[in-house]
Amino acid sequence: MSEAQRIFKSLGLGTRMRKPDFLKNKKPVAETSANTPAQLDFFKIEDNKAERKRKVQQSSDESKKKKLKKEEETKETKENDEEEEKKVILPIALIHLTNTQNEPSEEEENEEEEEDENALSTDDINLIRQENLINVSGEDVPPPITEFSQLSEYNVKQTLINAVGKCGYTQPTPIQMQATTAMLKGREVIGIAPTGSGKTMAFGISLLSNLRQPKKNGFRAVIISPTRELATQIHREINGLAEKTNQKGWKVCLLAKAAQFVPEMARSFNTKYDILVTTPLRLVHMVSTGDLQLSSVEWIIFDEADQLFDASFVKQVDDILGACTSGSLKVCLFSATLSNEVEHIARTVQKNPVKINIGAVNTATSQVDQSLLFVGREEGKILAIRNMIQEGQFKPPVLIFLQSKARALELFHELIYDGINVDIISAERTQQQRDTTVAKFRSGDIWVLITTELMARGMDFKGVELVINFDLPQSITSYIHRVGRTGRAGRRGKAVTFYTETDIAVLKPIAEMMRQSGCKDIPSWLLEKSGKKKKDTEIAPKRKEDCLE
Ligand SMILES: Nc1ncnc2c1ncn2[C@@H]1O[C@H](COP(=O)(O)OP(=O)(O)OP(=O)(O)O)[C@@H](O)[C@H]1O
Image (cartoon, rainbow, N blue to C red; front, top):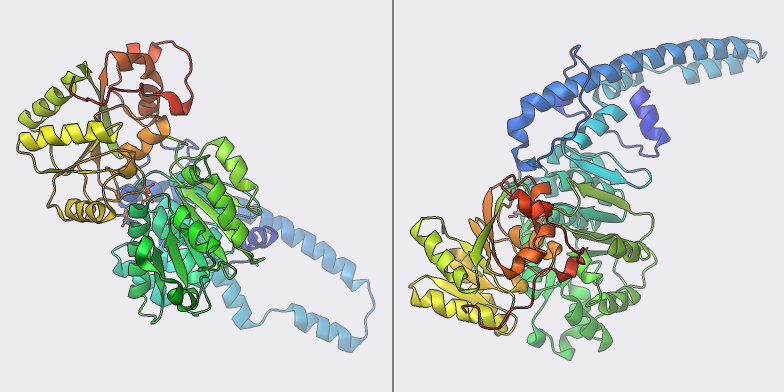
């Protein structure tokens, strides 16, 4: 058994990891830098391959030297032990038996040599994590994968691995590298990774694999999301993956429409499906009327977990967890942002979770070029948009965030008047209207979408070019999620935040966070500004309903 395997065993991992090809070449090289790259550019891994290969080779060499030294030491100890053993007098038959038992067959020897070559050393694992900005905490955290094909070593069916490929995903993102192996080992996870970095697939793949096959025994996995639009999107993605497995019978249910179920349907409903995607309110309602049972649930995922575990939802979350009565229930949390307070609450419902953090904590994705634009007073905002249009900086699709529905509606009328292909989405519109608007924005029939906080989290509109914070967001957390609607899945995006004279007093936290996420053009006077530290939820000043004066 190799040293690496011994380490794996001692860590209780027991998994035989195949060493990725890029880790196999070992040439003598100098020591590696332990510095973590400042920018998170995980979709561009391929571009960095040569550099990564060099670093990994360096690490592999170091570990090889260490391994050789250890092997020599082990050999010495073994020889001493053998000497000791010979002193014990055994009957000849037993000696023979003992010797043959200890002697590896030729086949075993070859296998060990092969394992030796393929095993990942602790240094290799650390380097993969370092290269992908994966930070982990928790006991016995399994190593990350670097290729989807390695999922087979975690008992994932080939049909599921193929399905991931059919979705067009060739390389796992960092959260997928690490969260999948943890969940596949049956571990509860707290997964924090930037907006647009593929968290949905991270838990989607793991759930489908852990459930093995459709059973029609009632819901075995539940995914909770704060908004109906996001639940619909998650449902589409997981259902799409399930369908591509060609494994007949996977039933993924979206519990979103109030009129979707009548009591007579409840019985079949409780047995027909494997996975449920829902918002918390709807689920609590169905559980309280007895129309839905959660006793078979083995996995529950809270997407946008920080929002679900904050004051506005925590009661419903508590009710839902109370209804999941299975002793083997596993609770996982995913989000791009998580405060210590929320993590503390969440940990009270988790058992020995693995915490995975990708990149810097609570910062906007580095895939977005962020900027601040001074507009003087409120009326300067619409002028700024008109200027951007004239100067060709208003490249659709564009998402514009405002503080209230009334302000959003006013801007909508103004842009319609300018002849822009624009629509508006807010919580007060009917579900039908919301669905139609989202579909039209997705398909490119609408170029500009004006919205409130409703669309800030989770929504994956492919190819959004520009996010405009017409009004400052209410919190840093909201800023991170809003600008994260662009710069997704490896594409770059732009985000412009308007600010007025009144906003200057509260802008510093946003400016600091922008700098942290790699933004260089922040006026230094803004960063130096002193002032009372505001709570995360208290940034934007309350504005008049009328956004143009
Ligand atoms: N391995 C992959 N390779 C390329 N694209 C991927 C991969 N995994 C997921 N994606 C794509 O990346 C996009 C973002 O994924 P997803 O919506 O899961 O992000 P997220 O991390 O949940 O973001 P948010 O925090 O904003 O909710 C989606 O369009 C998805 O199809």
